[in-house]
Image 1 (cartoon, rainbow, N blue to C red):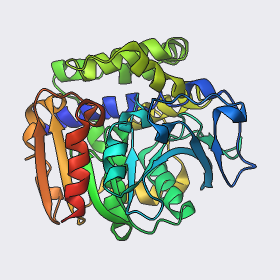
Image 2 (image 1 turned 120 degrees about the vertical axis):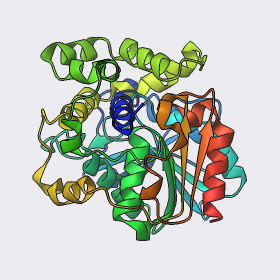
Image 3 (image 1 turned 180 degrees about the vertical axis):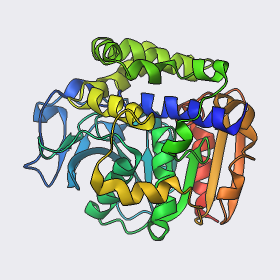
Length: 348
């Protein structure tokens, strides 16, 4: 499979994962909050696993958002920011977080825009899913939390976001862990056709480009996303409770808009915001990543699993790891391997 094929494949799953995080929280807004903790006592339902880190969701104003996030580990520990993708949410890290917390790290796991309890502060803000906007969101979150420098890691949309942060703001990034490697989007490259079999793998992107697709995703969000989980990780035997915990985040009032815009933007069917244009031009140029980095590939990456197609983009200390028998959701399918990569990149 060529690099282009794999990049397109990753684009599809990277955007698909954005639908899960917002589901059960309704349209409650938090624009009057600076920072707070949401608990069952607050009257707002918070889907949580058995681990205490996810039992209460914190909220903080950051940039154009009020961001919901889970936190684990000591407040004065070395900060680690973990980023989910579509159609996943922060619970992808529920087994990674306690491993890192036990080693003394402060682990921050935010809901991306359009997921969980994260909300836009203004009704007038464009519901924009382009890659630069999500990267700016995460830098704004670090600013709000007064985190000057952090290790960042993620998969799918989260991997793309972490890679952009490392490329554009290297002074803020101590180390990078990126599942599927260098998956920064270039709109011009995305216009090039792929072999028919490769195009078939991106059926959902074309579906989202239609009005029928918007209606279908709106009506069948959970069923759609569960299918994506199965296709992206065919060997992962997750149970209904695991999926439903994440599916709660898809009820975010902006979830569908963000997901649809993300994929339409990638295919140049939707425009981005002018305020991100300069950043996007820098991203389209394919900037090298200078910070210490570990990339992880899995069965999902097919012929690109060896990482050779993008190894030259990482010009700092670098390692590539291959996980056989693992699908796209690496943190949840192999939390030990993902956590080890975070710890190892910290030592570079």
